[in-house]
Image (cartoon, rainbow, N blue to C red; front, side, top):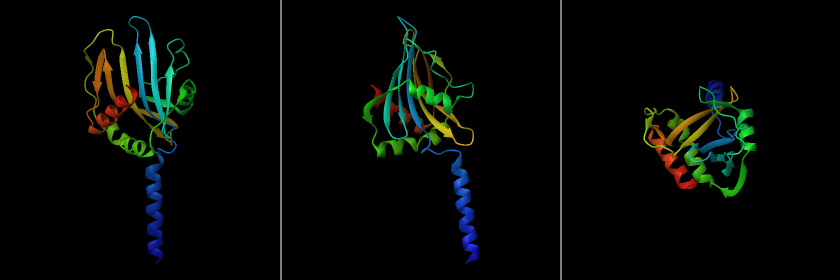
Length: 174
């Protein structure tokens, strides 16, 4: 009996340790759609979805100096992400728990996909980025997962999970 208790305790600790780095319940921002265009005037708008399924929109076309972007490793601090979320307006839309659970469960697999080489395919369309985020409790940083980039320069994440999430985000935002 004592060995079973120790084994159970060890497995519980092991499971908790493995899940410590990726915890979607503390992952305030899960998804982002961000459109930037410099042609024929400047546009910088988008949508964010948080872990409760609330949908936020932003238009920082007039003042994007306050918006924080991810670093060269596609990471952004929790503080900077909170700053960005504070620049958003909460909409009356909320994603259902079932949909949110389904699509957030695909993020880790999507993060394992490879990205295609950037291809210049348009001019003056700007760029729309479809992304997901994984919050790392150990570092206090969000890792940006590029799902799809459309517009002047296109990049695709080859993971089937990335395609599924990006298609869902496209349906939600257009």
